[in-house]
Each structure stands twice: as C-alpha cells, then as structure tokens.
Length: 233
Image 1 (tube, rainbow, N blue to C red):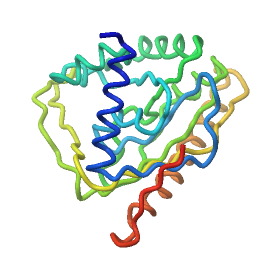
Image 2: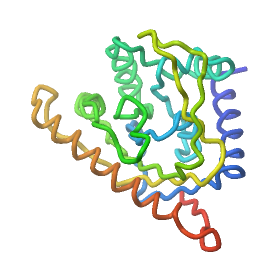
Image 3: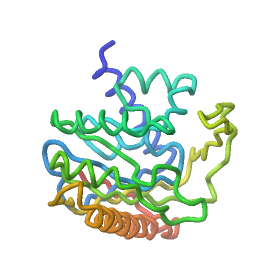
Image 4: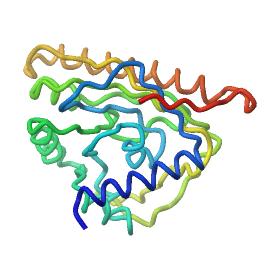
C-alpha cells in the first residue's frame, strides 16, 4: 500500500469516527491559503494529532511526540504515512524536517505548546518554533482553537516510557463534542535573528489560538437540544 493510500484510509476512518462518536464541529473563519502553511492548534488531548486530517482537507504532515511512534498500531501508521517524530532533547531534527517539508510546498501541523494543554483549560506557553519556521519559509500560520467537554477526558497509562524515563499518561477522549475553529492566516515579516519579534509573534499566535478555542467551547457548551455541529470547508 502506498503512503497516500494509507493516509487517505486513516483520514476516512478518523472522519467517520469523529462524526459519529464526537459530533465533530468544524468552523473555518477564513479560507485556507493554497500551498505550504503551518497548522497550529492547541492540544487538550492525546488524540488531537490524529484528528487534524478531519478538518484540514489536504495532505498534512504532523509533528508528533516520539512516544506516539512507540504505540502499537498507531506508531506503525505514523511512520508509514510520513509524519515527523519530535524527540525530547532533539528538537532540531524535527524542526529541520518541517522546514524541508514547507520549502517543498507541503502543509505541516505543529502544536506550538510542545506538550498537552493545561488539564484545567486554556493554553500553555508557546514555543517559538512555529514563528521561526514561518519566517524561514514564508509559510503562513493558521491558528486553530479546539474546544471539547473536559469531563469526557480519561487518563490512561500507556505503558510507554519516555526518553526521560517517565511514564507516558495519555489523555483519551473517545466521545463527547469536539469543536474546531480555524482563524485568519498570520503572515510574518522579519528575521529569525530578531528574538523580540519572534517572541512577540509567538505570544500573539497563542492569543489567537486561545480566542479561537473559546469560540469552539462556546459551541460545545450549547444545550443538547440546541447543539448542531457545523461543518464549513
């Protein structure tokens, strides 16, 4: 089986599951630009990377923690479909891989927090990798805000030990509403050497993500009788 076939098969399966079990709700507030771009969502659950293809209607290469590649089944799928492992202590390898993909015109998804979002809601501090990649490649950043029902999150010991020797605890979200809002593309102009600019744009990105996440949450929190998932592409 080819990489493209595996990717489309996995995408179709996740689409079906997300619509049936999660009542997937997707709202694009602006058209996604053609060509290379950086998808930058918040990260409330371990499942988020696998759901990116359900709301981005094109091939996306996703940067995923290396521990996910050790998971039975999922790990093989990630490797076979060309996604990029992020190894603790070796961010440069993943950064360079993402830069090459963007330079070749591909779309890449990166979770700028570099870890799961705070369990009690909101977003963690953003890392500067997304802004630096945007400056180096000219690719626009698409901020994405995810909202869900936290009471449906379950903590699961995966049995996987990280490179730092810690047990990997997954945040499993198998049902409950899952809403996504994508924002207006951000185009950065400057140089990666300007650290103040990079930090400022990173903070601005996280603010956008937080606002979009709140928009998603507002839809998720609608009473059951009023909740009607949207799907705009």
